[in-house]
Image (cartoon, rainbow, N blue to C red; front, side, top):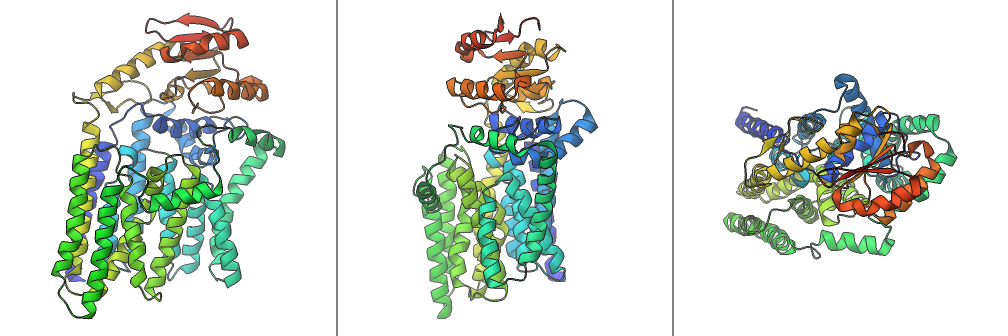
Length: 550
C-alpha cells in the first residue's frame, strides 16, 4: 500500500490540475448553435412546454431528462443571466465527480490503467469546450452504466440496479440505445443471465417516471400526431440500415475521414507493437524495442496534430478503445478478462447508437467512445502487464503523449478563437463568458436589437429566425413560438414545418418574429401568411410584430 501512495498523490494532483483547467476553459464561450440549443430545449420544458406537443426535435427525451436541472436553476436564480457559465461549470463538477467514481471502481482491476484512463479523458472538452448538453450528459451516464455493470462486486444487486438506471438516463440522451438494450435483453434471457432482472429493474425505474409524466400531460393522439412531423427533418434524414452499418464500419476503420492518415499510423503502430511484444515475450526477449515501436507512431500522431488545423480532437477518443479491442484478442476470456470485455461491448454499442442518431459521423462516434475510455486503457494495461518487462513504461509513454495533445488543445482552443484579447460579456445568458471581439460584437448587437421584444409584456411567444443564435430565446424568457429552437436553415422547409406546427398549436403563433439581415427574404412570406407588420432596425435586422402588439 505504501508503494502506491506516490502514484496516488501524482494522480490526484494531475486530476486537480485538469479540473482547474476545465473550470477555466468552461468560461470561454461563443455563438455555438449546439451549445444554446441543448439549454433552450430543457429550459422550455421546465417552463411548461410539452415534449411532442410543443417540442418536435428528435432529442426531445433529452429535454425531459435535463428539464429538472433547468427547473431548479429557474427556482434558484429566477432569470437567465449567466446561465451558460453556471451550467458549464456545473457540468465540469459533475464530470470530475463521475470520473473519480469510475476510477475508484476500475483501480481494483488495474490501478495504473484506471489512473491513466481517467486522466486521458479528464482534459477532453468535446467540440472544444465543456458545456451542458446531451453529448456530455450521455457520456457521463453511459460511462457510469458501463462501470457499475462490469465491476459489480460485493453489492452486486445494487450495482446492477444502478447500471440500469444510468443506462436508461443515457438512452434518454440517445434513444437508439433502447434497440441495443432489446438485443441484450433477448440474449440475457436466452442465456438465463442472472443480472438481467436487476439491470432491467433499474431501466424500468427511469422509464416508469418518464412515461408516467408523459401520460399525465399528453394523450396517445398528441404523440401520434407529432411523430411524423418530428422525423421530417432534412438535417436528420433516415438512411437505410445498410448505409448506417457501412458508415459505422468505415468510421471505425478510419477510412473515410481527412484525419485517417494519422489515426491509421497510430493504431497500426500500436497493434504491431503489441503483437511483436507478445511474440517476443514468449521467447523471453527484451521490451526496449517495443517502447520504440509504440512511441514512434504516437509521436508521429502528435506531430500530425500539431501541423493540422485543430478543428476537433473528437476522433482521438476512438483510438484507444479500438486498440483495446485488438488487445482483448490476447486475453483468456476468464475472470477479470470477462469483466473488461463486458465493459467494451456496451461501449461500442453506444458508439453505434450515436452514429444512428447523429449526422456528424466520425466526430459523434468518437465522442461516444469516451464513455469506455477508462476500461479500454485498463485492458491495454493488463495486456502489457502480462508481457512482463518494462511495458508499464510503454503505456505511460503512450498516455503521456495522448494527454499532452489534449492539454494543449484545451488550453489553446479558447485562445485561438480570435488573435485579439477576449472580451467578458456583461449581460444576458452569456454573462461572465469570454468571447472573441467579433463574437462579442455580434452578441451585443443582437441583444440590443431584441430589447423591444424582451420589454414587451404583450409578447407571449417569439420566433427568432437566426439559426446560430438560439441563445436569444433564453435572453427574452418568452415562450418559444416554434417546433424547436433548432430551425434547419431557416428556409422554405422550416416555414412549411412552422405552418404545420401553428395549425396544431395555434396558441404558439408568435406575437413577434426577429429576422436577421441574412434572412430578411422570409419577411414577405410571413407577412402575407400571418399579417405581421415590419419594423426595420438600424443594424439591418428587423422585427415582425403581430398587429396591435407593438
